[in-house]
Image 1 (cartoon, helix red, strand yellow):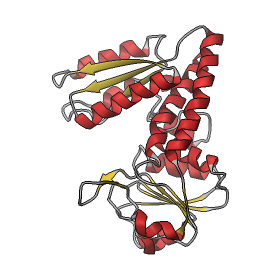
Image 2 (cartoon, helix red, strand yellow; image 1 turned 120 degrees about the horizontal axis):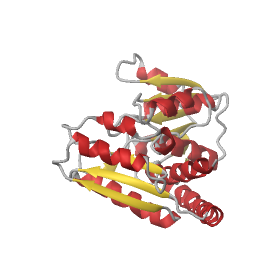
Image 3 (cartoon, helix red, strand yellow; image 1 turned 180 degrees about the vertical axis):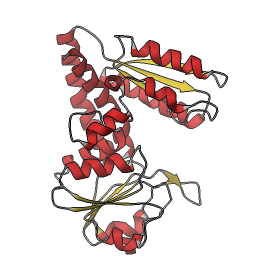
Length: 282
């Protein structure tokens, strides 16, 4: 019998704990915690994400600063804004909502100081993750690790397979599992015998963005299946990378879409912003 990992409930529990920690921090440090969010252009999905991040800030007690640049904003305007926030003591985290409009270069992201890189995307933070030293970790993989922790799922010694090798999810996910003493295989579009690789997984994480791509015959009996995908099926309904209806009965644990990994991502962004504030005092 499978168990659904309720990301929404775990995220809410973490936010409640975090709100208490932030209240304590503000009392002891006599200062607010600030997160700056930059949105360039009017991408509807990005606008929703920014709105949700601002709402999450209010919920846990983080002060949000939203900066909206028009589609006509220049590279220099974006870079000048990031530099001013980098030097602003009120700001503990800087987040540039991606994707940027095509005419802008993401080299602007390199101007975000490592200490304020709450997305965990900087080369230094990724390098520290590889070295297994203290770093800010990309929010989605960090959220997955928290879900496994909340469910008391043992990672050490397990065979973990990560499908997808993006810098945002796949690579940091593999590194976190490796740091937790799993034996890790990373699969991607050039992997041969993908089905056989997935069948070896005690923990299977899919982050490729293909609706219902992971089918029942790819999953080992009793596997833990984590679905990071966020797609639309042929009827326009939200779904993950995993064919949930047919895979669930083979699993010991599985995450749904929606309500699985999704709620954890913004929650870990809040957590990273809090950690950034704590480190700034030290």
